[in-house]
Amino acid sequence: MRKVKIIGALIVSLLFVMFISKIVFVDNTPKVSVNFLANLRNAPLLVWESLSSLGKTSSMKKEIALKKLRDLPDSSLNTIAQGVYAKEDTTNKVVYIRVTKDAQWEERQIMLDGKPTTIRIPKK
Image 1 (cartoon, rainbow, N blue to C red):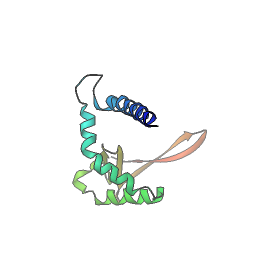
Image 2: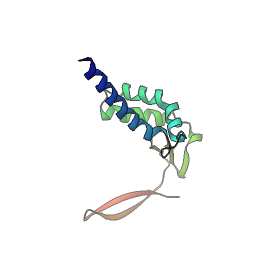
Image 3: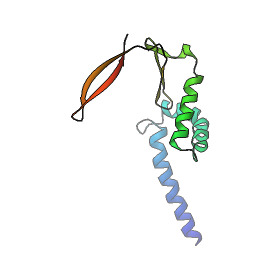
Image 4: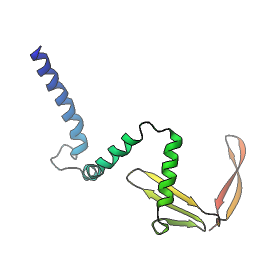
């Protein structure tokens, strides 16, 4: 039984090293990947967010994202058009869009799946 445990541990460690080495190192060289170092710095935050969102539904996650958007200062958002602001969160690959009441829209008709659909585009 002891030999089976040792062989199992060796197989698991080999698979672990094979998987992790592709993430940590660049093209089978001893150079550590820059992306890995950046992700390593954000790892505690990512683990905390994933653990805290385990029991939450998608609507609760949307509410959390909206709260994060409301908490962003206006100076950190890029102006797209009058009343339309956006910011990209590169760590989570999320784009936050804020639309205020003073936004002006231009409506256009397009064909989507063979049906005419009206879309609203912000005026610049």
